[in-house]
Image 1 (cartoon, rainbow, N blue to C red):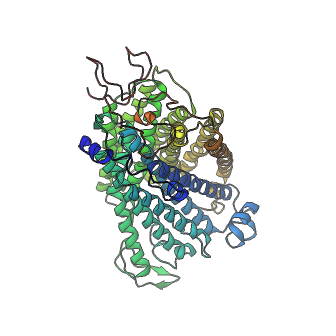
Image 2 (cartoon, rainbow, N blue to C red):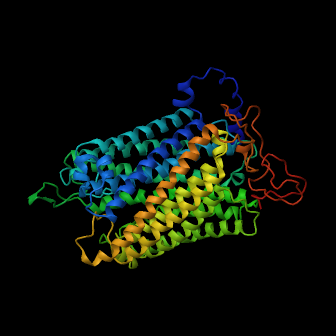
Length: 600
């Protein structure tokens, strides 16, 4: 199949690229996958700045509740923070927007959008994506979705305020709270656009990997990052449509008088006309996407870590086939565990035990990956550059965050800590911080490929160590206040004397959050400064084996100036006996009697 795709798409590569590119066709409406990946990344970084700023606002509010802060007046205005004191409904709105922006617009787009676009064609040996136009459309619909989501911050009643999970009735009854009005409608429109662009991108990625691999590039010679991105796209195709259906039914309930998710609702003592719906139905639909979504976020980070750890340990990845199998197992299991978010929704205890079983099963492929990364590092010739540090950090946070998932995944143990800060601590470590680390590792590692320059290593070290200390400083204490029963999403706990002792812990957490966020400015400076003034990169700065490092440093349409190289071996021939160099590129033919690593 790959050979046919090769012939069909690659032989006319030079005929149609000689027209002059204008600024608009090169930087704005570009169909070149390398430019689109930069667009996704920079948009993701801007959304990340907004999302992290929001988290600092509500962290300040939790640490020093009901105090007046100038920063609230500046950023929120007198309507949302009269006299510099944050309104309680605005607190909920900021928490909602923070969750939505970070999960969908930063982690999904920053990882999947950026690295699928950059790496899939370069690593499989393709001139571009299967459909360049659909790729471009996917980015512009994503940008439109970002704009619609951000526009809800500027309306009088405030943005959506029902939590990023938008459970009814708060999200389904427009007059419930201020944020249930126009803000919620904009959230739903933005999400529908986001799902459309996600499906466009995912179909493109899947087809490209299946059809456009170069000669000799069998599926078992693909780098693990391509496997991870391909499987991520498959999960997206299966699960995102379910969220779209939930959003459409919610729009029906809000605007057209149906009752899919509502029944027996009283508002200010008045009975509303809704009858016969079920809010738990919405929870099922939401989490059927919501749980695969966390794997859509973490699988690209896992793929990046596999790639970066193997390259910088100068060793073949340990258990290549087991790594692929575990990715496939995680993808399958991720679609049958959604009920663990709903153990306290009154579900049948037998069903709870089924979801407990499938949830604990998912620990097995995750552990396979963790052990294989550790074994790859074992006795390696470790090159400790910033990308490697972030990859190792990702393994650390994935393990430490994953362990608490065993508690939350158990239907009886979950009851004590459900909806407390324990849950926040768990998923921020295992999916938030781990995915961010994967994203940072990918940026440091592939920056020379994207921009032709190197990022500053010493700034990278400072960025990593401060981020690592502050991440644990924020989320480790949260486990303890969660076990003590502190509920999430409360804008102040001053009404509950039993939580008075925890105010000090919340202040410590907020301090770590402020310092950690401040040091992200070092990364931002390093990133944008290096694009223009960084040290010029060589063609293969990390001495890596995969195909993207055989392309010229200057970006050209079609990736390779002449023929596309043929592949003869897997992507992990590091420190192979009998070779002078400690890496053997995939394009080097096998010697007589030499075994190919991926084909045992």
